[in-house]
Image 1 (tube, helix red, strand yellow):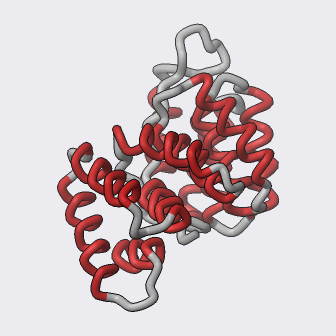
Image 2 (cartoon, one colour; image 1 turned 180 degrees about the vertical axis):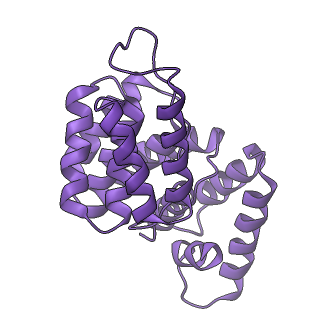
Amino acid sequence: MAGLGTATKVEPFRPKKGDHRQTEGDPSVTRYYELARLKYEKKKFPEALGAIEKLLGQDPFHAGGLLLHALILEAAGRVDESRSRFEHVLANHPTLSQAYREFGRYLLWREQALQSAESHLLRGLTINPQDSFAHALLANVYVRTNRKQQAVLHLEIASRQPVDDIRYIETCADVLGRLGEGSEEVRYLLHTILSNSRNRVLKNRVRKALRSQEKSKGDTLKRVFQRVWS
């Protein structure tokens, strides 16, 4: 999976009301978080780590900061440290759905720990049933464990609200490839992803990948998507 070690967009983090361990409204904490997020997306990992460490120095329990720290460490190749950080954020924020999704993704992609990945993804989806990327990841678990009907179901749910994230696209492509690229269900799901996306850039890239896949010989859909996004 090309998402390994690849920085991507990070969804903005907003503390929940009643979470007294968040310094909500502190301009310096917000500034450090946004700086770390920007540097992470630009793959400037040492600078991202510097900013997030300053944030956590002021607010050690900042949920978004802890999760972003884990993602930065993973993208920087410090995999064991990132795993520990994922566990730390879940221990301190057991209702943070994004943390279950990202740790589930880590377990799936990094360790191929399918049962544990499934458990974490399902837990996250009980908190946020509309997380399209989590549904796509769960579909990936199901197709790898020969539960194709469940894979199709969760990919259909994921396709209703496409995410502007290369990892989401590659995950969908991997599931579609494993289901059988020539099937009617696959063509329908690809059409749904295109139809429901509001992002013109994403649509154009998906179309480009499909045209490239039709012309290529022996290339899987996943590999074509990876090449188009590289």
